[in-house]
Amino acid sequence: MIEALEGTNNRVRARVMPLLAAIGDPRGREPLIAMLLDRNARMRLIAARCLARFPSPDSVAALERTLKNEKRRDVRIAAVHGLVEQYTGGQDGAIRRVLDVLLDSEEHCDVRVAAFSLLRTLRLNQRRSIVRRLCADESAVVRQHALNFAASPPPSAVTSPAEMQAWLERLGEDDYAVWNESVQRLSACGAEVIDPLVDTMRVHAERPEYCTRAGIVLKSLGPRRGRALGQALERVVEPLPLQTLVEVIGALGEKSLIYRLKDLIDRLAEYPCSENRFDPCLRVRAKAHVELARIGSRVAISDLREALNSTRGPTDFDMLSAVAKIGKRDELPLLLRAWRREDEFTRRKIGEAVRSIMRRERIRRNARILQTLSAEERAALVDILPPAGSRPRRVRAQKRG
Image (cartoon, rainbow, N blue to C red; front, side):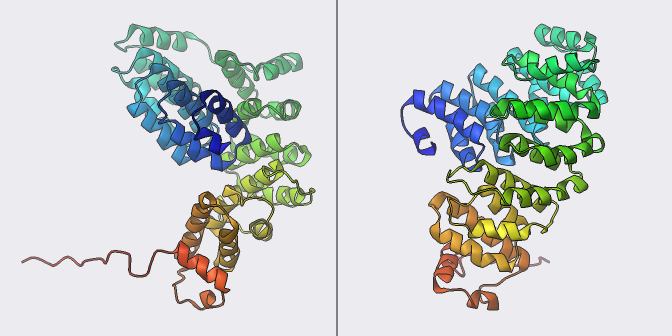
């Protein structure tokens, strides 16, 4: 699919990009970022929409560049919506550029109105301050939109199981206004929404957009009310809902929840290995490893080492991100053996992990552990590390006077 994006058939490329977003494999991120520079405006628009499914600093930076350089209004609107989804996906830096667009009097009013979707995700005092400023804006369109926003009461929580189920179904609607209102109403329910939302997400387990929106609701509950997710984690078996729960737990940052991902990893490791190169259970395990690595935990290091040592399919990028954060010198031989069997695209990520471990562990080129490597592993290390003496020397500034 990645190779198809390099072709010239726009019909094929338009179909491939949503598939890459649905799979969620991190290797799809860079090709989508490259598509933001395509000559065809429709390809750029689809790429901006699909990149929203890959929350990361690189995705945020790419969408910000699109807003800076793009002339087409529809592509700019897609980039704004993409940044809002990046923010709800845990990328706090995405809020900066959306606020700039929202408050920029020289920006087109349609693009600024698109940025209003950010306001529902902000705290009440932040929202009121921005809306108050926009109510006096120079643009009549923006001013009226802000007045309508200020006059509309905040979405109230649903009051009955039947009403809650209706909003849970509307969460899957294509209309942005409908599903966005559903997010707000379900978020107002607090912890009571967790069980029915997780059950409905399992029903829609093959719909990535539904699971993404369910994740937005769960993240809005905050760490205290989100503690009930630990029980939901134990009864969900479908890969996409499981991946959503892992991402939500990581975004909430509650360590007691994050440590429970170790049990999930152990459970998934017992599943029969899939012959599919895009094993969805492996993706969930990889996401769980990343969240544990973010808090510096090595409780699941044995499973991580097993995944690095596996020859079934390519090494998962999230696994490499995890080992780059918590790996030690014992993981270097595994990375070097993986480097020997991977393609050039994956080798770059492995090289970053190797260099990260060596810097953190202060391992020099002549370290004893490196002398115990096999000939093939030493050859891989030579290819990964820059040539000796290639770094520029630091010149000590001479004191004047």
